[in-house]
Length: 449
Image (cartoon, rainbow, N blue to C red; front, side, top):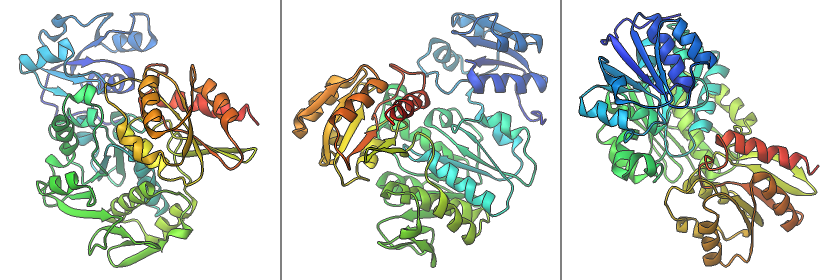
């Protein structure tokens, strides 16, 4: 296992455990760094706490006292902890550097790094790019926001392996020297403002993905997104655009029948398994990243002919009594739900609701033309009921949770209908994660069979 050799700090505070904090703490300890850990929800008897204490860490649990900052010269913050947390705010006041563990991957990964971010489509694009590279018989590993901790995976990388990272704005906000060989920006849309406070802050975090790139690196970006087109002007890296609206001389693009990389036709759309314009965008971005990393056209074609989607992201679940059930639990913001709804022309029953982040839902109005009924749950159910009223949708019912919502949606449905879970909200008001919410949906659907 690799160790940190160029970490210029001697006493680190790891703020928040979970998977990323635990991996960061273990790496720091194994690299000879003094480590203090602070986690509000952990207890001294937790297995991970006992293990880290045995490795030499000082562990403070149950609260976030400001004294945890005494004598430390760097903070490694769990990405989910906001910057207005008292300890984080005090660290900024004391001018103590605040990092996320993604910085460690930058030092440990001696091969190429492909970093992928955007408001939506990250997991699909990351999975596609990784599969395209692997299918080309090139060594590759995947980590980041997709489920595997970047620090943990990076410690096992060889010089020949490429590391593909799915990165959130939370992770990108805490980088200083992170420099991917290939950066991919899919789109930028108002999201996570409860965390970032302003759209400017959110954009700044996302654009960190290319801040440290040089003329020897590549920036793959959505040329149809005016925000990204403008942001790309700041990049020092080689710009590789993709578009579903125009032909491009470089990068990837699509017309009404086919997809291309530069002047090379990759394949006909009719041979692609995954549906939806938003997924065409994801494919084009993945093609750019994979091609720049040496993937073959034959491998790309095979992946696109067989890839049916990632779990919880526009995932086909079942056909029951001629109703089609789709799980888009990862649709945690309005843009994701817009794209899911725009993929269907047949009557749709929308299951939506969740954590209230203070935003309205009027931006969904133009996408509700085929929605015949809505089943609503969570903190935002009354806001979404107001949306349904504006759209003239009269069949609206409330559910206590996703399981209840499936039963009520089925009762409202007819043959040929789509029953779509695309909440447009985070899950944390009722569930620990969007994965748990999606799993409950899938389980409830299968009970109908």
